[in-house]
Image 1 (cartoon, helix red, strand yellow):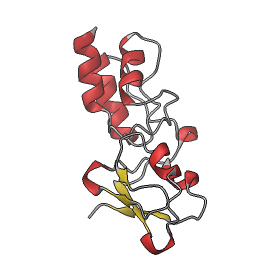
Image 2: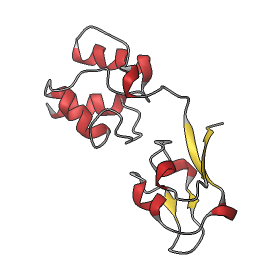
Image 3: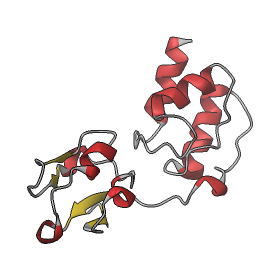
Length: 135
């Protein structure tokens, strides 16, 4: 089952956003490999991702579940540094450690690490985080 989990995990977008109902892409892949989760739970992967997962599992393809969220083009977080108060709530919310900064100091996003999961946005008390399309 480890091989199957690896194959499924590689197909997932690695956003670690939790929209699938699991704590990240790997737990979702493990659940699919065990037959405990369907292929339609990943909005970031969209319909194409659901089809790819179906091929690997040998099940009928179906579109992703729109009730879990909207499929969006790749994006990254951007902190409006002039507005950042250094509260560290965004750092705590980031599942991939893509935000750096110290308490009471400005924070910034390491763009190549950011998955665009959006989990930092609601964590920010001053609304200084924007999501921008990946060029």
